Length: 424
Ligand SMILES: [Zn+2]
Picture: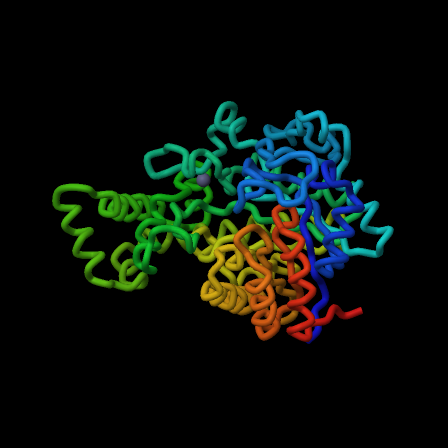
């Protein structure tokens, strides 16, 4: 079968430590990549994530990135008068270089597709907590959700910052695609397959422990005709029940969990929670559409790609059917390979089906392949064999920094075994 693309991500410190050409040689030569992208804004997350130490970095054993720094040039003028402004790296080995231009320059010499990702948090969340806590998503009781690492996507300052950053990125750099894995509305773990919840009912119940119930959300919901009083009333009732440890509410919770009620049954009992879920979905469609329009206005040729990064993103406000209107392609970000358990590959199959159902067949869907520690060459090859039967348009490798050479080679081997070829 034919695909269009094998994408590989690189971090600025990979390029600084290993050298740009060596990184590109490895992902193209060993793993058949014909598309590269820089993680141009990276959140505060240890690298490599699923192993303790780097397998092939000659300079350091591991790396702790700064919180959501931007590793390429953007025009300060474009952010004049805005509450939020891009924050640049303060580390000497990174801050004198435009890493996006560096990678794209090298990629173009080899005729490779070139992209950039703006990852999860997009703005220094520690700085936001200190200086502008009003822009953070809030629980029902007004405290920040998710440890203060979620910006409210209905806050006008946040929207202005995000759309300007996306537009400035494509306006000033040579990229074919821009990828977002923006954190949507916080779900109190309901969106992740790795959370402790064992049923759809539990996921639905706990979502009210997420966000957002801030004043900006209230204003927007009211302006769109939602009944905010009902939302607060029903979300409050469900929250009391979900968080009950003692007393009558605890008994009610025990009975509810024992009942095996469906999520639909729960929403019928708490119609305000359904309204809140619908409002969140309308909000996410709006921000994704604003990002799409901002990118296209800056450079109409640039492809907007969503990195679908949690298994149940409907609990974060994503309605998959909206995707066909506000992105050009989707990267499924399932990394089941790195669990070391081939049985988990069924998750990828479901994710691809869910995304395809939403985005349709006119737009490319790429399957991610986890090549990090705990993934083995055997699982990677098996995953690619299965992906070949899922109607995918490409692969996207995550991530080079933690991948052994054997895992990189397994991508090319898996493609050969699956009779998967890149269209010229
Ligand atoms: Zn909000």
